[in-house]
Amino acid sequence: MHTNPVTSNFVADITGVDIKSLTDEEFDEIYQTWLTFGVVRIRDQQLNEDELQAFSARFGPLEKIPLGRLPESERAKIKNLYVTQLSNIIVDGKPIGGLGNAEANWHSDMTYVDNPPPASVLLSIEIPDEGGDTYFADQIAALEAMPEELISRVETLTIKHDAAHTSIGKLRPGFEPFDDPRHAPGAEHSIVRTHPETGKPALYLGRREWAYIPEIALDASESLLDEIWSYAALPENVWQQKWQPFDLIIWDNRRVLHRRDDFDQNSRRLMKRCQVLSK
Ligand code: OGA
Ligand code: MN
Image 1 (tube, rainbow, N blue to C red):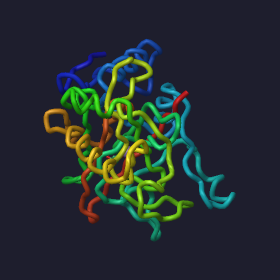
Image 2 (image 1 turned 60 degrees about the vertical axis):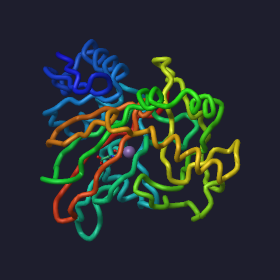
Image 3 (image 1 turned 90 degrees about the horizontal axis):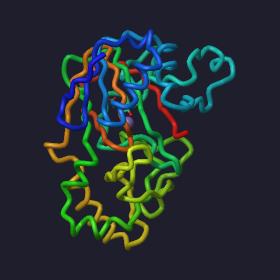
């Protein structure tokens, strides 16, 4: 097994490993590399849902897929309760996965809960020729890029992270619409957050839309958030993933932001993912 840095400090490829027959030592090495870098890519992993779920569960407890109003008879047909699909593919008039072909702005996953998730695990199955690239931005580097004076203004402040909207800006089922970020429901976290496992400070922004800094007035919050966000994804701290089928990427939501390009609805994109929850 080899670790090959893709960017100098926050993305690594791991080669020479088969996730289907992973030893504990190999998993420990993947885990350490993931903590060190924040984004790990392992190519050519043709995993089925059982295998993806088993691998992801080594990182921690997994988030159950939202079953919503699905009738009991339909629920029984779902084999892997911890694997979701992201896709624009429509079968029998129904999308087979989330997010469609839409662009997703910079975010990290589920930051709107009190104990936000560490890892997200994403496996590509079908990939369009063009579009649908995913980008990652290192939030340790983002913090380091900020002027000292700005850091000292924000390091005692928090952000309230909106729980009501998805990463493509749609209202989630069960939430009432609102038009004032102060009314957004969601958890509060320090803007500069110490990583619980590495001890390293990083910016922790969640997403820009509907964010609010509750210690200050709305106008001040809007302009301060814009100022902080101007450092969040500087080109030198961003890496672009051009997917091939069966790329497996594990990222650390406490360390990086991610976003994804839109793509042509006439092409097909299918991803499978597991959401690791905090222990
Ligand atoms: C995610 C996500 C990006 C993509 O899985 O959390 O934002 O490339 N997906 O589809
Ligand atoms: Mn996401």
